[in-house]
Image 1: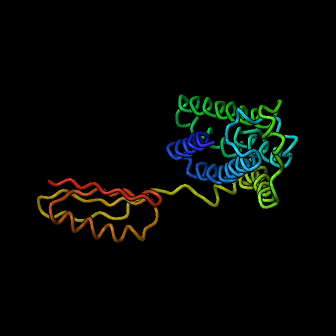
Image 2 (image 1 turned 135 degrees about the horizontal axis):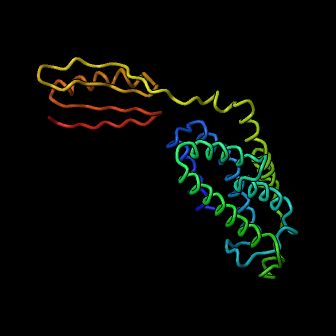
Image 3 (image 1 turned 90 degrees about the horizontal axis):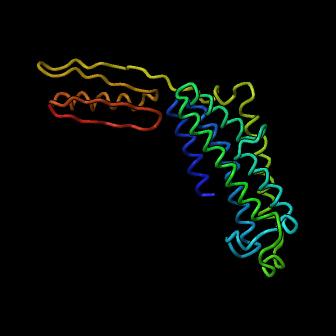
Length: 239
């Protein structure tokens, strides 16, 4: 489960790198639902069998039907099964990446297939087949409502959130891609380099940065500032 989180974060970063700002945040949202469902489902299983070693599990679908059904939805969502949340956000990311870099598209597609493989393996070892520890299987039981009710809520969100956010391009309307804008150019002092402040939206910080850069430039520095979303990087190069 932890490795699958890293791979999904990789999808989001690739989306941002390819200019798919809305696609990356779309996948962040859908991933929040099905990954929370997977971790809560894993906790439900560990609570029932008192171990996290899948080699000692098996056949738990009969003992834990709610956990089994909800984790199946989470598995299909993270694997990108059609009409579940993960398929909408992953497809949007793959579309942006394909337009930006076809080799990277094939790398991401391979990662998606690997995710589907090892998550299916996890599911089979845990819920299907014969039990591999009779004592743990005998004492296994479905989790209480304190766990199963959130499982059902997260399963519903994992199933429908992708469709709801993708309907009529809603996610792209809510999260438009920030547009770069050149906001001011300072007048250089005699013998000094010109100064340009570049902002990607969010102009409140730009006012403060323009004041800072002008003062630094007056002391003999060339300053380049680039602001994207909420990240701010300043590189100072003395003359």
